[in-house]
Amino acid sequence: MVHIRHAEPADVAAWARLRSALWPDGSIDEHTAEAAAFFTTPRVGPGVIPEAVFVAVAPDSGAQIIGFVEVSRRMYAEGCETSPVGFLEGWYVIPAYRRQGVGRALVLEAEVWARRLGCREFASDALVGNTESAAAHHALGFEEVEIIRCFRKDLKPETANEDYGRPLNTEDLSMDSVVHFEMPYENRERIAKFYQSAFGWKTQMLGADMNNYVLATTTESTDAGPTKPGAINGGFYGKMPDRPMQYPSVVIAVNDVTRSMEKVVAAGGKVLGEPMEIPGVGHYVSFVDPEGNRVSMLQPIPRR
Image (cartoon, rainbow, N blue to C red):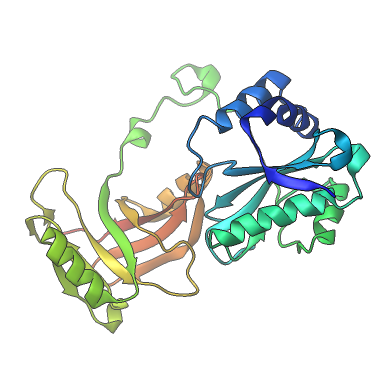
């Protein structure tokens, strides 16, 4: 019977060879270095890839590693409604041991790991043309949710030289500042009392027309905002079961939220829906950066 266990430092060479078979674009030296780094770099928390590695050892193999699975928790995965999501990053069984339940055992162990860490969904992906992988996923109970096309292009350096197009626009390099933080709550009286007692913050309970938002003032402020350089205020919002990634986050002020949404997507992020108007405040929208962090943008109403 196949034995599934966590990878150990002594497994680096064997694991690297299997990684090289799965991902041949990387050299054996690169795979060995990445495998060795797994045991020397902290691997805790969503967004770490991989966060856990399991290997399969068969009794008749002389303790030889015959397969592995790499798994992580991602803040977002296509087609999923909860966060974080357990994610199958890599999965391989040597040909001689395929169709014997080894791959299934590895994936089931990865699912147990994700479930114990609070994940309610488990996801994976494969290239469109990899029909063998698609069939294996279907056999393990995965459902196909999305097919995407990925694009790339070379970016030439911007310069006044006509060979490379228009001169560098310094306006594109201006920085948008963090101006606000947000944290979710289940009980707004409780969270307000905590931050008042622990840190002396002032809080203001808004009504149902503002979704029962709680404003948090952390420093001396005027209508224009904090008077202390570098300080920001924030707020607390009620948790909602249909909203993804309800974790502490920051809000970045932008001049043009539509343009900034385009820049987020172009840089590799994912915008979550359309901007909503907050009366008396501005237009607000959230996005997910390439590392899975949820952040928000606000185009404030100009103050006179």
